[in-house]
Length: 204
Ligand code: HEM
Image (cartoon, rainbow, N blue to C red; front, side, top):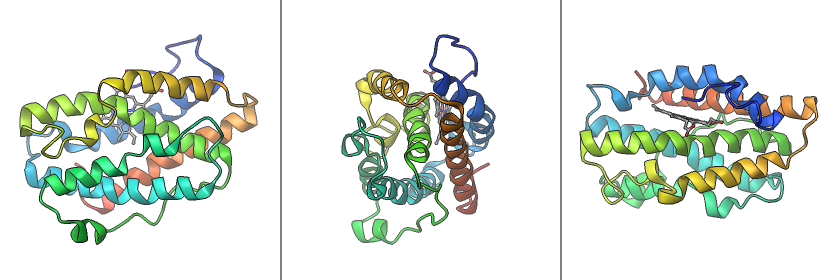
């Protein structure tokens, strides 16, 4: 769980992002069923279907926007392929995956700052994924080959890739109004994701 204001040496933008999203992170974390006694294979599969229904259109919209600030390679950081692979491993054929419901109320990606805020949320989620991966391995016997690849999407490179992302974030404009736009987009990304997961009835 991120703790805001813990690293006073961090760039202002990162500090603002942490402070602006910590509450939303805690709220969503509490409602995700990964640590619930009731989580079984069927619920996990519905959860990954719902993740796919958010990540697929969002990653496509990020790419199509053409507004991601230079220095970030979306092709190298896409998580949709891992989700699609997990769904196949969990028994869905490609036609069923294509037919899954997709979120239509995505965060707005109308300027570079908005893309940045959304990317912060998607990249940060790979950190918690490491904890969830271990939990799902223990409780549902999941690994990268049988439906748990998304939770370990960057594998051993998770820490380095997060650090690279933070370096990238550190090169972005630091004025207060630009920072506020990035934070708003990150907040909106958390809110849209939670609303979507709720509508798919996969949350606690
Ligand atoms: C039960 C589910 C989750 C758990 C247990 C969890 C746990 C964590 C943990 C432990 C960290 C800090 C890692 C570190 O500092 O090394 C973290 C960071 C983060 N997580 Fe989660 N997480 C969960 C779900 C999510 C989801 C669904 C999202 C967004 C879609 C998300 C977004 C983030 C972000 C943006 C950060 C980075 C915070 C920073 O700036 O350091 N997390 N998470």
